[in-house]
Length: 109
Image (cartoon, rainbow, N blue to C red; front, side, top):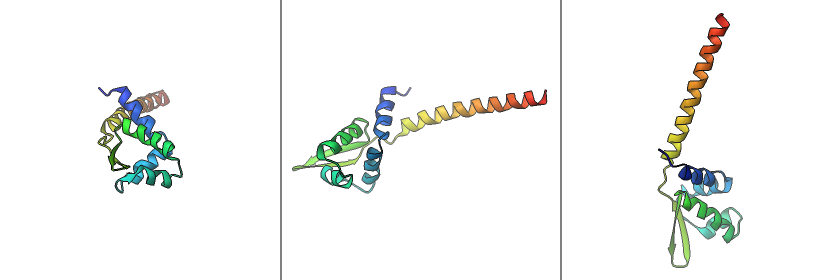
């Protein structure tokens, strides 16, 4: 069973366009927090809050090298979130199939 708190933190992290942009940017490789702040025209404290939420969801890892903190993509491959979505999608498709069958039956009556 998927822990809903895990899903909550991941979906909360993905809900913001800046955080999704950070993830997209990190697909090209590591970036410093300063580089990310400049890229997204944000203050260091502002971008750090976004990074913290992404870290809590396992989507980003940070590592300090000297005085610079670097971000990389984390270990969360979104498998559990995709499984949750697939399960709900299947449930909705099953309901729609039952509705279509019902409507076909009532049309014939």
